[in-house]
Each structure stands twice: as structure tokens, then as C-alpha cells.
Amino acid sequence: MTLNVSYIVFEYLYRDAGNYKVFGEIWLTGSLTEQERVELVGSLESGEFFVAEQLEIPPLCEELYKLGGGRNQDDHAWHAFAGFRG
Image (cartoon, rainbow, N blue to C red; front, side, top):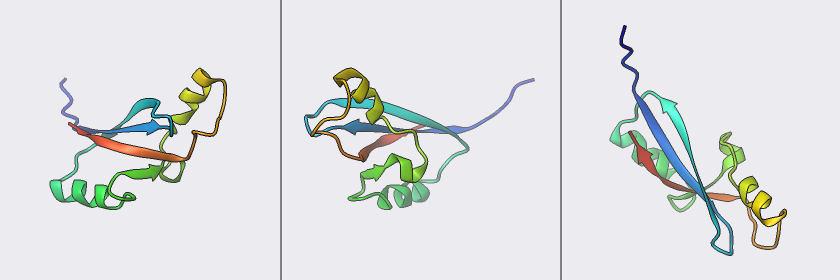
């Protein structure tokens, strides 16, 4: 039995003020039309930025905290949309 499941990958990243980056992705079942993609990106701050927790998307900043020994003056809440795949 072959399952024909479509998906789209929402790629995003966290970049602190020191330009250290962590990349992530969310796999979503289904698909988006080009118009839906445009609307989704248009709903982001400046067409790019969002606070992951507000969208119930896992925040990536925790990974930098682990590497850097915790929060520092370069940290903030903003994540950036990187693109769609699929």
C-alpha cells in the first residue's frame, strides 16, 4: 500500500545580534497555494520576522544558549523565515 501524502517544510532561523545562527524546520502535512504562501509571508513582520512562541513553533534560541552558556546581551525573541520547501 502506497500513501500519497503531500507536505511542505517551513524553514526558519534564529540569528542573535552577534550574527550567530541556528536553523530549523517544521514539516507540515498538506500543501499551500502560491497565494497562501504570499499571504503567510506577508503576515510576518517586514515579511520575514516572527516570535516563534506566538506561532507555537519551537524556538531555536535555546540551542545558542546551550552553546554560549546561557542568555547574553545579543539575544532577542525574533526568528526569521528562511523559505518553503516541498
